[in-house]
Image (cartoon, rainbow, N blue to C red; front, side, top):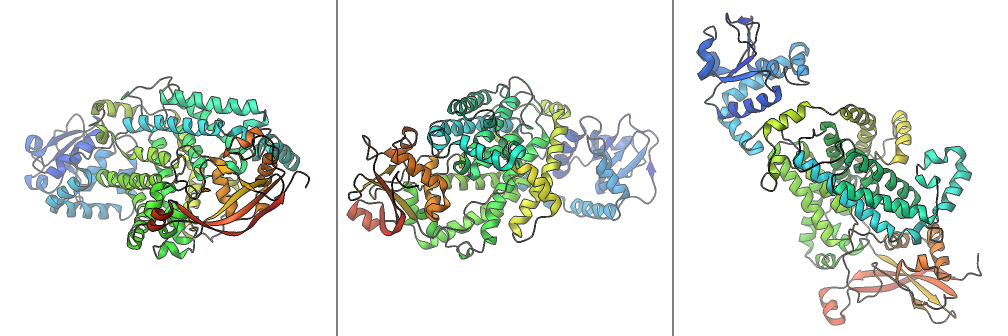
Length: 621
């Protein structure tokens, strides 16, 4: 506990002086952290070297606790000395304020200090275990730079992937023309339409403008990768991708699209406002921007795990979800087939691993260094395993890019030269002005994100009106999103086989690039490219044709042999003249087992279920 009456020395030092036990490993390690935090405002000297200057402090007091001698001669010890020394740090006044004014805080912290002081060997071991040999605040110069460049790569992949498909998906002669969509929304919503759908396509919905948006995205992605105009590049990328996401309608309803938008928007506050960045430069890293992106990673992973447990799907609780997943996921890989053959106990273990990583590991994001690195390894391992067994576009790459922010400069030191610690301290003191803007954005998003996390745990709780109003304004911009892939596991795999006929008697199948069709076709890798029509066909098979207007539009395009629509397929059985009729047959697909695979050479078996779309022609409405 702190002394009952104030202690003073006759000859105070010219600056506050902290005296500590130089023989204590635990003390030496944490003094280095405090020295960095106070940045020269406090001097730190071992009691063995400097204690003799102050005969007013008894030797046993040095053995019991650290002693802080201030310029007015006042002496404090223990937790009080720690808090008073840290009050000289930037933004450190709140700690001594809590000690002086918050009831019970002083007694609690002094008791904790006393327990640690009496068990220094144990505390030193815990320090080594959780922090290693360096407990100073981590710096993230390298991680921030690599993460921003990785975002550039992911944006480039996303824009190029869309560019190859944009005409057939949302072009003027495509499946869901964006011009007609915006025209319908304007008629329905009037002047509010641009606020409900904030897209640059209000300026023009022509095919040429869609290509301009894709081209701009590709160019500014390359600039971001090169470290040129990083903040401006991210702003342009966000606006272009938001515009295309809204224009894309059902074909852009995927969680990685909104995740890329949210990550790109928040990264604007992490990126330096300069024309060029270089490896290991001394540009200050925005602590708020870093925090916002770490919060996004936490929200993504924690919500993805919790919603599985609160969805009511027993397969997650009884650990049988992966008995179905490898076979029923939208676009499995050949390794997905092999994993489906694994023993039931291994699938149960894998399901438990998924839940552990998604529910528990996110909390390690906020843990001391070594635990944080373990959390990073778990999160990255899960993403690699998902990418090996299924095609999820750029989702896994984007999640791994966010995980890079958990690796401080010490972690990168073996790969990249490390910035000097004095440079790190100097950079921290040069807080960027945009930090205040980031604080404002963080406060605005906090309520929406807090509700999203709470709703994952208590999904039936109604949203408070104030949060609903704010979320309504933010939702069109995709900057505060909920996540949760496979909250309810799909237990079977229906597949639509489209067939065309010239006479209504003989039918020939259309072949898609990547979705299952031919039983002998091996599941392949296509990620990070996303064939969006193939994905939508998986969703369409889970419902009915009438629930998917785009499905009828696609059928009409095939009946006319529209080049933009036909190019989305791998093979058109009617290259010369379009078919007179098209129908859809729904099959139940299953993976073959190892014996069937050896005997037939097939990767799939199927059974006809029902007619999905009765034969239609252009003569019908």
